[in-house]
Image (cartoon, rainbow, N blue to C red):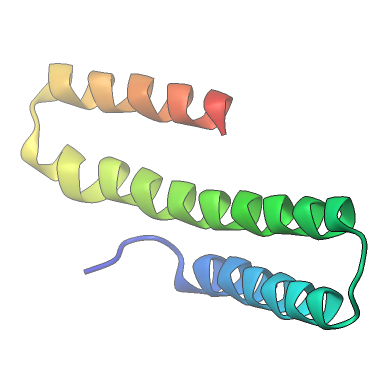
Amino acid sequence: MMRADPKTVKKLLNTARGQIDGIGNMIEENRYCIDISTQILAAIAVLKKANQVVIQAHLENCVRETLNEEGQQKITEIVQIINKIT
């Protein structure tokens, strides 16, 4: 069962879908390669953010439920690092 907020994840995925559709239009319009690449990177960033939300919820809920206090502290550390690198 996914523990992440479904509305947040769905919104991010819809944003990525819109960006990908826009990229398809850019390709059909024969737009500048760098502009297309920039939009691809933007879509990737949104998908990474959606994944971050899902993984963070998994760590904070599913994994945390199975751990003792020390393990829970380690989960908090991991989440902090994930938030810094994304």
